[in-house]
Image (cartoon, rainbow, N blue to C red; front, side, top):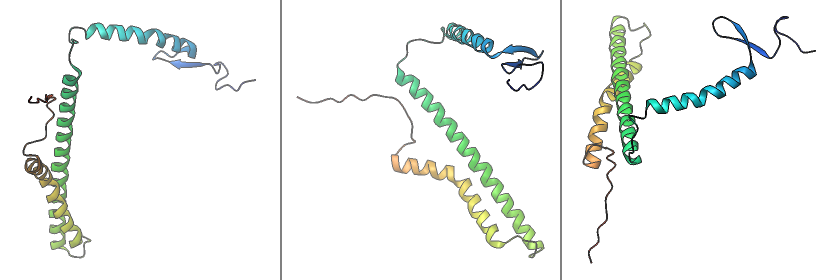
Length: 152
């Protein structure tokens, strides 16, 4: 005898959907097996106009460029927001320490907040300057292929 969750519901069925109809696991698997290939066929028809023969290096270059731009924007946002918050907290902590030195605002933590906030705010500028200095140009992925030429 198998244990049941509810006396009127057997162990092989689940409730699915908003109207709470009783459905078996095999029915769900069968419908997913039918829906997946048909969804793939419909999506390939929908993207057929946009899909054309492109070199894989163009696609990779575009995807890499978008990914690097997104990472750069996220890093800049994190540095500017985090650095601004740290500087604001350090300024508030210094103000609180000046009003009441026994309030719990330690000068070492306030100075560390100023230093870390300044580093966070300056990091995007420092990274750009370092890339110009070390590489002579901003890092970019062009996907260009160079051909080696030899003299006779």
